[in-house]
Image 1 (tube, helix red, strand yellow):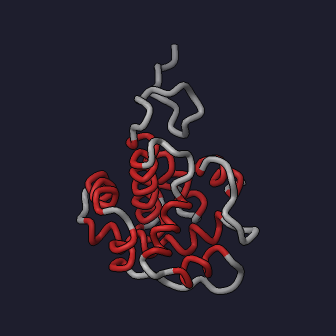
Image 2: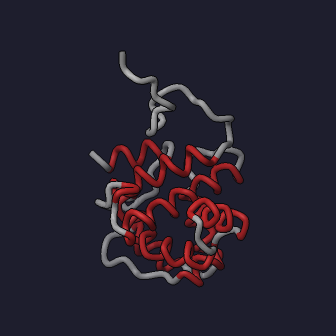
Length: 164
């Protein structure tokens, strides 16, 4: 007989973790984001795969912080806007070239506890996490907003739609 497997890695099976848990959410989002960026999730290269996993962990932490909301990307972009990065964020959502962002700018734009949680999950410092997020964030937002607008629905559904 076949082996009994653990929870479905992409969230297609029944929920096995308490609502608001960021472990599965961060892992799922990291894998999906890695696929979206062509890094294949955890098997991807350090730039796309590792950064996507950190970004997924950050978005998972932001989801739990916001009461389990389904799409923390809008909140992340709001944080960037409030940190004075409106031009960068708009360049990623709109058409045209994506303006870069630095790790320091990411650290200023996201809540310290969410960044700390993402860094701990990855086993790196918050500074390293912010640097990796800064590398993948422009391309990720660009690919998740192909129409130039923030799509509605859960972040997981949005990623799956773009990762056909």
